[in-house]
Length: 92
View 1 (cartoon, one colour):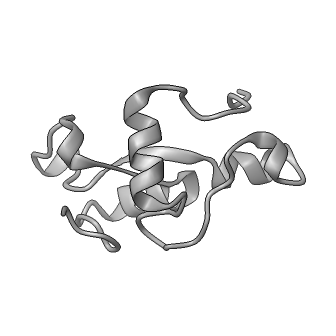
View 2: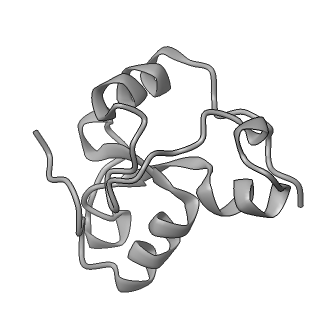
């Protein structure tokens, strides 16, 4: 399944992007702003920004904005497997 070439274009996403300076909340490295910022679609699939639950839904976390942050798709997937909560930033 192909991934969208750009992240969601909504105010909430833009607010999180600006707050985090375009960096992943889990590893702290920059995230690409679009598919065209990386050399290949496979890289985009792993590095694209995704919404991450600070407290995972499986651990009782909500979908409320104060429980969401942006993270690389790969970082989010790795964290999701552990279900132990954020290993990077904490809620501010």
